[in-house]
Length: 418
Image (cartoon, rainbow, N blue to C red):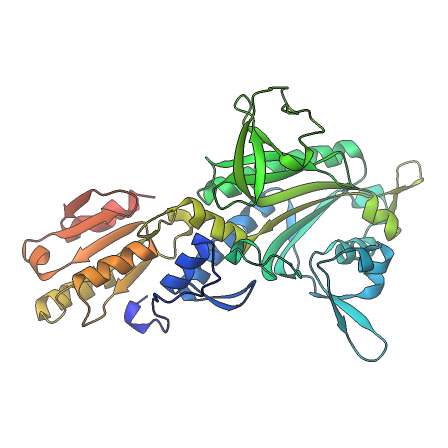
């Protein structure tokens, strides 16, 4: 991708009410645009990050047997009345669809997936299975002030699993925990994200969250140094300031961002919709369910909150918008220009993702500052001076060391970084 053809530009002017560092950096770098509180457009480079996160999640859901579907965002009032949530859910967007019909903009999809599953589940032979989708959600958040960390419209991955008995649900639930750990690790959050015990509400004694330690977090968690799990402050009275897994008393208080959650729903929604199956003895039993969610924009923003410095973002390689930021300097020099263009073509031929700063009329300092702001894993500088010496200036965004490589060695070097 040529930076000269990007229709968006970096900016120094930010909305005064933007308080999260991740939103400030995304807006400054032209990765995102704010439409209104809690609603953002992802621009080309930001959308590339989003799609890589989406693909990681998709791969991990398929690895535990999830089958991808796509469910509607428009949902009938009747389904929400069956579960009692039409009136009780305060974040629900309710719309009029004609004179006598009301619908909801879906904040979640239990009310849709449960009757959908009922069309296909008849006996124990139809169980277990799991479906997931990655789709827009709409929530009338009263506190949409933390950028992409808390949005009113966002994309979420929902996985729903269906089981004949508690043992099968428990087994799948453990697989989902491991899959979530892999997702956060692949996105660069493995060292600072903890399985966290939280309230199960009306579903069970506990649910589980995945909380990433960050000063930007809205939650308080208590970390167990012995077994590396945590407890959300909302239940700490229930566990008497001790780890529910090992009993450790000396827990460490931290602020954290919830990046995922998983619940054992049991028969709550299957009972509401009459979702039953016939067991081997011919008896009708309610289907047991689990649900597992990740907000993609929140995950993207959390990566920035934990991977940035005073200069800008620092993207983990697996989700960076490109592997290399190639900066061409001295483009008025014809030889330097030809060499930089050839290098760009060679990188693309080698299938290395590259953002090529081929813009004319900017100083080296301006290009360096934008490269630091964008935060791609590796910066390569092609200038008349270095090219004349048969070298390229190469620097990783995550450290201050600068190396000089021959152009012929660059591709092998970059492949060795992944």
